[in-house]
View (cartoon, each protein chain N blue to C red):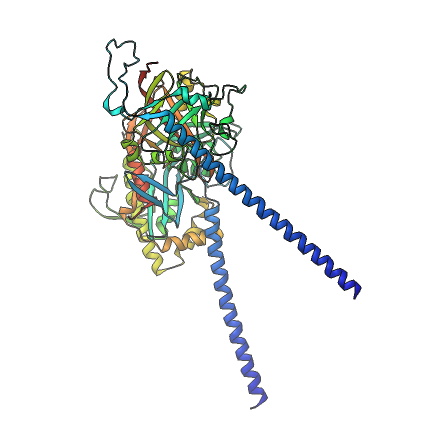
Length: 282
Length: 334
């Protein structure tokens, strides 16, 4: 009888142990889920706050073109009326790493662009998992690597952003996989402290995950051309190219890069060509 | 009741159970073999560079969904009279002069054939003399086969080249023929009737004739290399012959269900394939349930031009994209 009681006690203990472990596991999982949710909401609020306080829409200024050959002063065309007006001084109160603002009408892309000035690695990825207010975790921020020029004067500047399930960051770039959408939403606006830039979206490519700035040297025509060829050679049914437009090594590009759902080794990259630049009055 | 009668009754009952068991067992085995074949065909499908066709595509405002229940086979015709081998030496291979994708559409029960002109300029893999991969270059499609060993390796490379050209379409298997196969195949179904569009050697334009084996060989293989665009004309004759052959073969199979198996055996010296055993069973079952008509014959759209040294066929990408949607996708109903 003694033995049986001891046996029962042992089983009881084991059962209790398992229950405690399971309960602890549940609590930890719930905690992580809540933290993820809270962080996401917090980040969403931070970005919304920046939009409200630092960005206005509408053609507030009439600016001359930054084209040295053109002597006449010209108004910004009516079609660029959605160009945002950005208050960098207030933005820098949140984070001095903010080097630009990107706005793509028709999508949810309306974010500050960051570059980690303190980085020693030219391919630093700090802002992949830190938001604009330096809080660690998703959704991170839209950022460029230190190897690209802060004023976007490089022949190709790569902007990275997560593909968030809730449609934020670069998730809505997916819409460019529809050629009709690309036709109807051609402009991407990039505002730096010095310039207002207008880019025309001309390609959406389901690319592999090669490190573009690490592999190609855009200062070399042959390397730049190799990159352009790799886009047209890609051969994916979801690739879209703007009709009648061919990117050449004379163009200045931005490449918007984001992840693809369920395909770790693919990236969606959206190419946009610089078509107009306006100097900002300071 | 007499004990003897009871024993007999029990014996008959047992016999019936046994028979039922055997019948069910055979059916189960057949079913398992069929499913294994299908699984094997899907699992070992070839794509290039890890790219595959996407499930959904949006084009001109319409959403399309990838068709399930497709089997795609690459048929290559090699311009040689030598026996087909599974393994050869690198650098000894010929070019694949005739290339067809045979698509078995299980949903619509249709066979579709897509011809890939031999001069199609596309990305092919090149290898060095030792057989090591170097890079991809834009070259004639027919040349891909030549970079292999004339056997399995050549066929696999050509399947990848086809998959790459077709935006990552998975290719489930290949069949590779040499020229002698034409004569054997022609004979197995008692000759193939064609009506030539242009006068071809002794055959007059507009007159229907049932080709004998030797005529079939010449009709499908001959090309005057000095004549401009002769490859296109030959493709036209191949299209005609293939359509007529398939229609007659399908009709003959209805009367003689074992015909495909006999054809397979008789042509095996002139053919190499990776579709055997259960895979063949599944492919045949999928195939004989389908219809085929001349409207099911497609050619990769493009334009024949004279290149620097040789003739080149440049794909019309927009028309090709729309053909891909028509062949492999179903429009979403809104």
